[in-house]
Image (tube, rainbow, N blue to C red; front, side, top):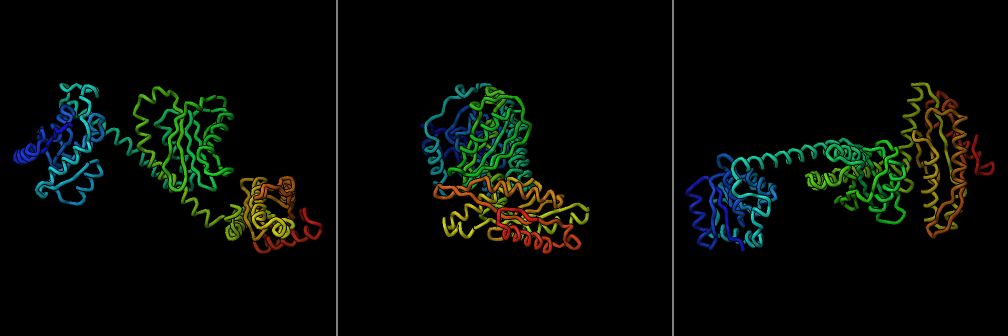
Length: 478
């Protein structure tokens, strides 16, 4: 077992006391007067443990500690900080920087030897000689140490800069997809990849964000989307929302060469994947180490964005149908009416009520009724424009707000909704299917006095909805 201990301290008296104590306990001691000498000695001698002071000339203990923990030739060495500093901040920063133990110079008798013995046991067997690590002991001088310090400082600065960018974009993001898009765009600047993608999923929903650096063909994008969804989905038939940034084109990609890395997310699963343009060059670079170092931070950014999005959804969306709740759809209608009045453009509403809904509950059960509401709402949303608003107005009623649409076009839109529901069977929890229909009432803001009253507009649509039901259901009025 390696019993060599490197003692780094600028005080000859302190070094002599430490060396005598350690030699008396059976250790071989190597001495250094400052951090620069300590770094050279550590790389040359490969000690089992490094004991170092913090305040020293030329190079103090913190840069020495960071260099030893960052360099592959010394990262395995346990480091004991032994200093006159007793402040909490000094202890905290030492341990956060990578120190394995921390003692003040007024430690109790025997504590130094006990700690060094423990660290030697943790270090295990003697490491490979410097030559096996690609080091020439004779070439390890001040210039080599400074070069290594500079490289590690550059790497730390790059990592800190990328991390800061990730945090800034994550804090500014409104939802998961915006945070994921910002994170992938940032990583795309340091990874020469044809595409980058991230996916996260919970039990009831999944989210996929893809960023294309190359115009990848649609078939490969579809396969990638399916792979990401299957990788993170925790339950069969989990709905997954996929968004894609960048242009699709004719570039074929070899998805088997993609790098897949797990993201440590809370209460869910996550994955980051990217396809290096040159896998051999990527493997030979330090970029993979940078990506690995950033994974936990990226997961935290995306997780926070996901949770923030969930909180927003809880306050704005109906829990069953995932459409706007009554309060929000009514508030949005009021806002759109005011905007339509100010800019003098048309606006219509469509009020929808599922036919014979009570009979569905009575015949098939309330779980079947929930399925009808959930899947029926999805059909309505599918057949509306992205600029249209849809909310659960109450019970089995849904309200759609159609900005810049006059009555005739709104009637046509309602007819598309009616046909969509009529032609789409609903899957029941027991595996069966039923066909559903709905009745619709349509109204235009120009039909009500002044064109600004939300109550009057919805009331008119509601009267027409009941006309549709009285005329036999499954129809649009007017």
